[in-house]
Amino acid sequence: MNKTQAPIGLFDSGVGGLTVAAAIKQVLPNESMIYFGDTAHLPYGDKSKETIVQYSLNIAQFLLNKGCKIILIACNSASANAFEEVRTFVGERAVVLNVIDPVVEYVGNEPSLKNIGVIGTKATINSGSYSNGIQSLRPDVNVSSLATPLFVPMIEEGFIFDDISNGIIRSYLSRPELKEVDSLILACTHYPIIMNQIHRFFNFRVNIIDSAQIVAERLKFILSEKQLLNTSAKASHQFFVSDHTDYFEIIAKMFFGEKIVLQRTSI
Ligand code: DGL
Image 1 (tube, rainbow, N blue to C red):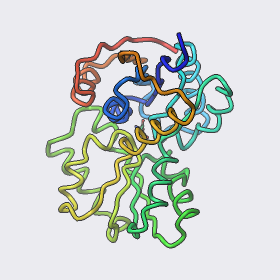
Image 2 (image 1 turned 135 degrees about the vertical axis):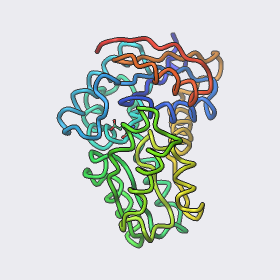
Image 3 (image 1 turned 90 degrees about the vertical axis):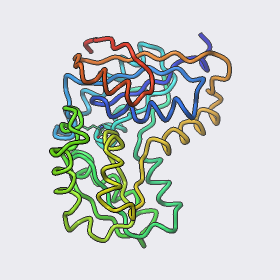
Image 4 (image 1 turned 180 degrees about the horizontal axis):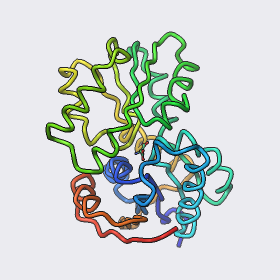
């Protein structure tokens, strides 16, 4: 297979990275994807750096075995804790990307943003990747970060449009850290799934920054720069999980926009 026709590999701890896969499908309709959801080890956000690195390297090897031209870490917790390790491990075999750098760059180039909130898992927030990255480009902005660890299990368990999710969303978003924000970065690829509820909580006056679109545009730029864009083949996608959950299949269809066949595999 010619390198341009090789698939894009992407991974997350569960369904979250599908929000990125859906954006890639829109922005790059010719590209084939291989998605890996590490549902056996979810959530990553509460794990140590060493553990997240180990899981990420195993998945990177799996995606390399599948011949991927790109390995996109479609998980903020793994991007924040394992990007350099995955990049070193993969070397010249594929291009490795994360979901944090494109958002940091986007914010760095948006002079209208002044008070930025960041919500994510403990692993992402404690790494300081967003706050340090943004402040090195824009020392003039305030960045307030808040770990919101219950959102991932809540979403994975299907609590999205009900009293439980509304209560948890209200409880986190009314914390003093987010009082003054004019923009909020969803620093977890699961969170776009509750984007409407977050908008509603803030009465639509806070600009919500969802990384999926920004990352997909960045990926397009990099593919074109490296002459890896697939301009000919018809895209086909494969989805792997390390543990099968019925809910994954339901939400996967909901967020990917088409029925998907899940293959269980151990890594
Ligand atoms: N979707 C993930 C992220 O972006 C994973 C969260 C988790 O597994 O805790 O951080």
